Image (cartoon, rainbow, N blue to C red):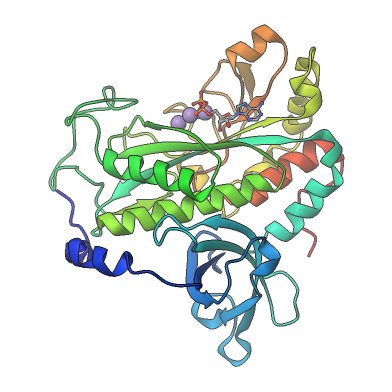
Length: 371
Ligand code: ADP
Ligand code: MN
Ligand code: MN
Ligand code: MN
């Protein structure tokens, strides 16, 4: 059995006494932001003397960017700009989580702040009411980096019984999945559902449908909640797209997309138009579908294990080996949405939704970030 963290052994009954103390009129606000890796999340907490009602009630703050791979020590202050507020499922009402954009000393977006350019693209196409739903796959690990619940030496039985599996021999770590689901609902994250995945100790949750910039905001907060729930249980969630080499499925972040036109009667023709546009920009999309220009996803998009090859673009109805899948029901009803299966589990949803939106609706290269 994989090792769990030291803090998971602390006395949780003692903790409960302090967590239930009244706090008067004060409110704890935990600021959450993306660090310089483009994958890692950071957070810190402060007291407000009044309960914020809207995001504008939460003041700007700052942090030391030299400790988050975001700035040199000599000019290290970075700005935290709250953009989205959620209820805090760990400290409970009235306490809040505030997702933040990060600005540099000159108030320009930090290198890994892709929300800023994403929101401009979403603003430019808002009459299309673009919706997204993202399927976040992840793998549970012990603090030693070994998959949670796997034998210390050797492997579990081959893939087959684990996808949507039930029973102690098939489902590894469901407590975490259930607690994360509840935490998302409490916080106000638009979680759509969850399932056990093909590889043991691999799981998925979906967020959506979300319109425009809301997709990235809700997925990042759902990821924050996942890492925090895992911390409480003493295990680690990795978004690595291929945590185990060999005959084990990788982890993606399938991105489902629809515009108002696609959802209306006869919308299939708009879906086909979008797919045609995507087919011409395969390489550009692969470059922004993981934080390392495609280098992470290359381990996953092999053409095996329900993936398409990273080299080729393909599309098909009900085809889980294609880059783009049109769900069977959408093919039958001739309206609905399509699924881009290429994004890596560790993708930045702001980058992915920006690129898809720019390619399908703007006919420009605004999916590529202007520097
Ligand atoms: P799969 O069959 O690929 O495993 P899931 O059930 O895991 O699909 O996820 C479906 C996703 O599609 C959800 O995130 C949901 O929010 C999203 N979705 C459903 N309808 C739409 C739509 N019209 N536009 C965009 N996304 C949608
Ligand atoms: Mn799914
Ligand atoms: Mn899946
Ligand atoms: Mn899918």
